[in-house]
Image: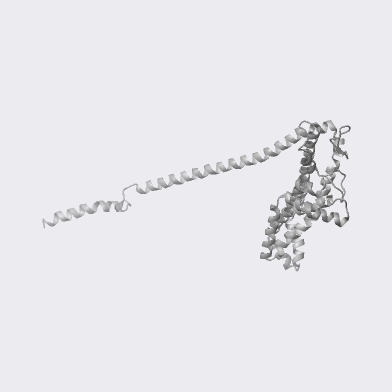
Length: 341
């Protein structure tokens, strides 16, 4: 009996700490406070990553803000520079004689004249003609790609349109000069085929990619429920396209027209090669000069500080205001249509 007592005491002594740990709610063999330490370290790691994420978010916001400010600063800088450079010539020539004069002869030694009315009217007629031809063709192409064409055919045409957008403007002018100008000359028995008609056709082709791409995207974004509801009411597919899909996508289509107009007004290199570059009053079969081609053709040899050079800056100011006016008018029209809906 005496030999069993130490064994029982040792067993009781060895099991007592484990029983105490179990009673205190701690697993056997784990030090007190280990779970709290791991939770604290996890919280610190999460807080660290949250701080890094917030810092990156702040950095990206600052970068976006800088980009926006830079874009606005460029527009303001160009506007201020054109105003400073263009106003003196307008003041010296006279705004009436400058805007409504019909003769441009800055190199005339006896009676130089700086009337830009032919350039203004030519730019208006050329842009309007390009829009009249290009918008229906581009819109119908977009409808075909978005709603009618099989996927394989649409992919081929879409690739061709994208390639058309990537062709440099000088290539358009070169092709127009070698193919279109002789064709117009022979077809209408003209002394020269470099006319306003050739410029309109080239501009209409050049604005097609902008109209097709943006209009296709807008038409594909029209909810399918609109078209399905129209078809369920008995409308044909063509009726649904023209009465539902196109009206629902008119905001994007209007945007494509704005982009096309901007491309047509601002083009110079291709137009100077097919329009004849002569300062005449606009006629469909006459050689003409646009606002952009007037600047491009004379800026290289106009002496610095001369009235001719300052007048070219004034033409740039008129062109800039002309583009801004068109954009404002189109945006106001689009906004009113949206509010009317």
